[in-house]
Image (cartoon, rainbow, N blue to C red; front, side, top):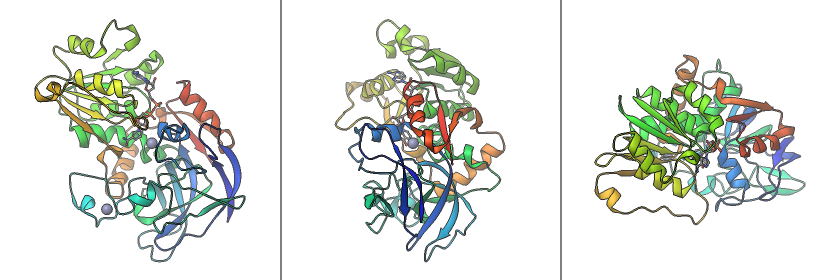
Length: 369
Ligand SMILES: NC(=O)c1ccc[n+]([C@@H]2O[C@H](COP(=O)([O-])OP(=O)(O)OC[C@H]3O[C@@H](n4cnc5c(N)ncnc54)[C@H](O)[C@@H]3O)[C@@H](O)[C@H]2O)c1
Ligand SMILES: [Zn+2]
Ligand SMILES: [Zn+2]
């Protein structure tokens, strides 16, 4: 079939709206009509060319709200009309990661998801006769996309897809990092570095975990209002701090925070986030994705004295099992999504979503198809 999609022909160039050809779903695959898609910093990261795994030309987008259009052979649990959220980390239910309660990193199709192919090592998109790479197994910046059944969470059709699409990455990542990865306890002091879609969702998670004090940190003071509305208790702009931000946070928290989260992708901030945690028990979770070749460092002694450095992908959430519950928590008012969607636009204006992200004006832009 033919449809319209935003094609990333090469790094650092605006996306181009093109007519593309989408092949039928094959064995175990599902053709989806994309209703809405959020724009995440990770899309911008890949487009920047800093992502070692980025393959071009591709169709970006991984925060989708979709409806099943057609099922390929041997698809068992989905039918046309079902509402789904595509998962960049699938859940096959059979691999050792799926069997482990300690990880959500299903490896069943990882080698193809992260190289831009479908599980059978072929692609479903062509444009002007040229094959186009898939992206994170989702490619939601297209009116239609093809995703394996094991990478689809079936959700309550009562949920608005233009809001719950954010559960496909940003919001689930932030909340899950707090609840699943760090396991923040009631009364804890928490520091969140970077107040984009991910950081603000960490704040939501910290509120859900009943943290006592939630310190929101961003170089853009315009982000404070939203952080406060979601439950942050303190705001620090590192630009207003003389000297080290980690020393400053330790000073105002009587020795350091219990938990910190890095939601930027900056290796220097990752170090600050670790070093501002309390000696003896502080836990710092890296969520931000840093550029190719970058490394983190700290004095080993900072770990010897009882701090822990952790990392979290998609908030440690097993998508097919747990995401439907996140959608229910949104419907019951426990998870806030509506105010996170600061901008909406049609596919034709998708490049504006990237501009708004880079200028710091948006929390999340959602493309409405
Ligand atoms: N681990 C995962 O599963 C996962 C999932 C999604 C996104 N990510 C990553 O999380 C990061 C955040 O994504 P996002 O969509 O929220 O991004 P975003 O661009 O919306 O937000 C980033 C925020 O960080 C702030 N910031 C930048 N430099 C700063 C500094 N030095 N100190 C303090 N604040 C600073 C910016 O002002 C902005 O508010 C990205 O690196 C993204 O790739 C990881
Ligand atoms: Zn994302
Ligand atoms: Zn698996």
